[in-house]
Length: 231
Image (tube, rainbow, N blue to C red; front, side, top):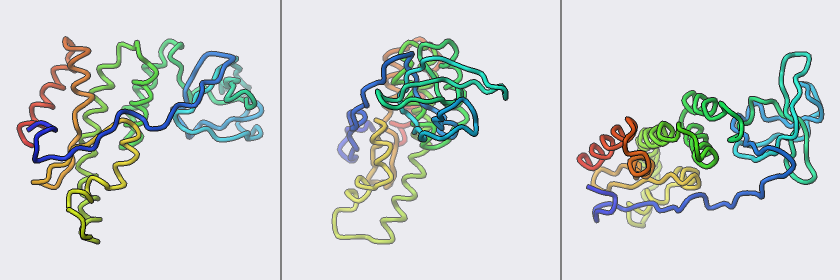
């Protein structure tokens, strides 16, 4: 059965509900993808004064690069019209820099759960011309369907702890664990008969539509066939 069939209810989202900050100017645009390394420092040193920590998805403008005595390369970046500093090269990727799409894909593959989803979304939002888009779309869809099982289990546990008085399916569809995925444009359908979430398949359908001759598209067709036949 397809997501619109009447024994299902659907979580709708038209993409991120939060507007992007205005991109900083003054250099080559880049985006933070490795927040563990995203310390903006006053000088290009690991012990340099901390200006602030930058979160995943934050846009910066790269002005220049410098490699310090430890062999660590730092970018001098603008974060806003008033804030600038040095950030470790590995913390960011830039669509204008050759090979950064491959580097981000490797990071996505090493990631798990929501981290994988959010980094895949960064890739799809910023690397619009990369030949690796089919691979990332398949990864996003597969990861979302895998996560649906964990979301179902947790939502059922919370429902059991407090049954409430509203219709049962409405508690599932209002489950707070869905919120951060919703903000990433990743949505789930709920099967009332099995009381389980499933990924709505949007990335797989986009893959088939935009890259129909790729091996990943064939995989996506198989995923959708299994999804519709089982549910």
